[in-house]
Image (cartoon, rainbow, N blue to C red; front, side, top):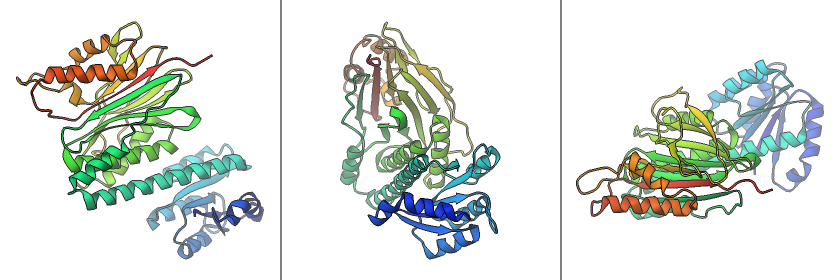
Length: 385
């Protein structure tokens, strides 16, 4: 049951919140705790160690909300803070976000917006907790290759969405029992779709462990951060904090709007996807390479955008595709991949992936697979009338 600590010196707010959430409180779906200032809030946190969310006003006597935020960061508690401030008070909003606030709402409070913000914050918190649970579980099982392989296989989505506006299909073949490549796709707010293609350094169980943590952290962060570049920046810092083995991951993160074919993206040192035009033209998406995730904090990840016309497709892949070698050690290469994709213009997303995988296998011949091979194709069909 989520527990929310409300910190505000206005007694009317307590009455309004008790009225607003009375049914959920009675049903045992939510617990509310109240404090009138930051000092009292810290006392309540000592009494209630299971608080998930602090909803705090900024202007209060004895200890204001911004000072309370600084105290919360020192407690090292697994909770999130949402600040309440006057409409247009951008200075305090920026200060609050810099001090670790997850989100904010403005006065006079719109309770529909407040409810949405609370749900989003609690969902983000639960996903982050799930990431930590996944990490702890994998640490205990990292020597069990069979278990790790089944776990990895189970988390990669294999049921592809059926939508008249777009066609999506993905493929992964690990070089070992478990791999470091991963792809993902999931729905975001306002009907948008998140698409991820990534490649973790190394192979085997350590790479699979780092892959699963990276995937879960990105998915959790994307829930609360709409800007792809800022999303990668936050995930980067989270990975640095939990990266004792000094691993890293290259990642290309895309937000796709099925209504108009517009895609915004950010790049963390990953191979640039190819844009396959309906006319048959094939070209890499234009983007700066960026830095890999998990190595250096404070880095700004380059972002960009592209708008697909009906029939256009984006082919995402890892370097296991272009660096696949034949018996003589010759790689497939980006030029050959582009030529293969030109032959696929107008095909379905699945057909494009199958065509590329066959080309990789034919090029490799009897040479052993040296790297994970992963690809994902998104084809825009156009918004229905």
